[in-house]
Amino acid sequence: MPETPYRRVQVIINPASGRDEPVLNVLNDVFGQHGIDWDVSVTHRYGDAAAQTRRAVEDGMDLVAGYGGDGTQHEIANALVEASVETGRRTPMGILPGGTGNGFAREMGVPGTLREATEVLCTSTSTRAIDVGRLRDLGQAEVGDRYFVQRLYVGVE
Image (cartoon, helix red, strand yellow):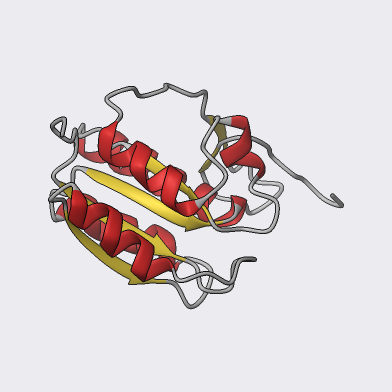
């Protein structure tokens, strides 16, 4: 079995996402087969994924993976970019499709099932750099400085 590129993985799960599947069983099975030390945290409200991501970076995790939809992935990506800017440490992001549409996961070429996507995290040494946008507070709208990936919605979607 090839050496895994990430020894310590934090998985952030959004339980309100669109799928009904045995997430922990699949993660335990696949990560266990590859000898990966993994931990899981569960979101309850908006902002939890970002806070959990920051803690994972502070704890020195090798990879932060989100199980959820585009909103969950956006929160994690935003927190990873902020942490990189603040600390200079670049922690990779893994995408585990768990939402209803999974637009971001599809656009990144992530396999459509949790088992296959987790297997990729355990075996692939490939990473992909993506563009990140930054929305700055211009004083007229109180948006704060925020990063975004994939899309930016302003006003009515």
